[in-house]
Length: 367
Ligand SMILES: CC(=O)N[C@H](C=O)[C@@H](O)[C@H](O)[C@H](O)COP(=O)(O)O
Ligand SMILES: C=C(OP(=O)(O)O)C(=O)O
Image (tube, rainbow, N blue to C red; front, side, top):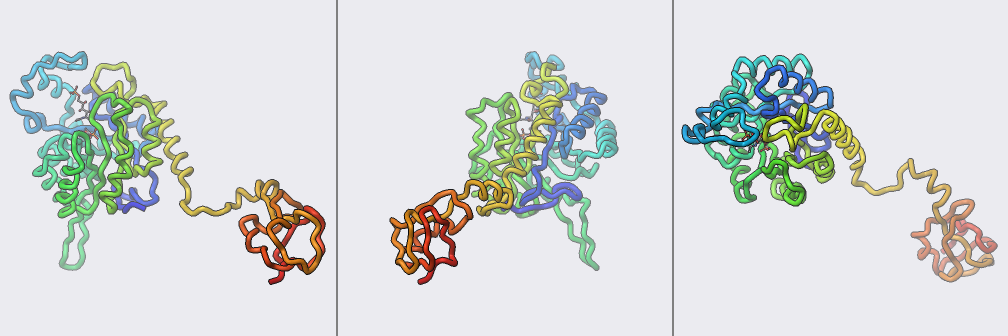
């Protein structure tokens, strides 16, 4: 069972807690605040736990030349990458409005801080946890500063004031396991509460590069943190499988319409798919059930109709010493000794006369 911690007020992840589902609105709002609000409401209506955005302080995230780069993609919102990114970026005031809206709707609200200044802002508005996008996962100075950020959960004990780090959800796209080990060591020094998400950063992600088997591998490498999955493949099935393999956090891009302009829409889930995904995850979690193998009360009726017992293969005389060829296994009436115990009867004495097919019970046996 993986470690658990409180990711958002009153909501733990890891252990046997339900998978925490993040609806990644990202930049699928097209730069339109009203669409962003519709998407927050949609995420809530579909049963997601959290609505997430991507916050950049553009001049801190990109170099001048990167912003001046021509962006000729059909998904471009401007002639240069800078113009494109500015079109998609909400202001601080707009973020506060979205946060307030999410609060009213009743869904957790956060964003990936796409640079250190963005993290400062998210800290200021008191998001419940920091999401580290894959592109920053090997940005060690950023990780150190982010991990050190105190949270609103400040415990005041007499003269002591203990700051518990704001939890972190860290994606692993474009990274190696060696880098992830270094990330683990970096974060762990400052913040005990974090999770790694298996992620491959391709949009849409070809199924052969999903590598779900990395979920148990991550869990082996880092047994004391919960592991999750950030998926960019089309459809919902792989994400449900990720949960069956132990993902305790699941992040998927969401959209109001996959055909819209924008790099992420094609690999995103429309509302009906998100609702189906949430339902399927809750179903598979229930189906994962218990690791203890035993006959369950719900199997009693099947067992009573078709469960087998040890019976006499031929007529037996009171006092006879049993050998294996005197016994067989059948669906019998009444039920008797369980078949797995048949070998224990060999060399024991039968204390009653029995007809062929008669059920053998414990009470009929003597050493
Ligand atoms: C790696 C990373 O940050 N990926 C993000 C999260 O998955 C994406 O949402 C990008 O922001 C998006 O694909 C960028 O698209 P464009 O370049 O058209 O603005
Ligand atoms: C890029 C992001 O996520 P991921 O790396 O998980 O795709 C993000 O959270 O902005």
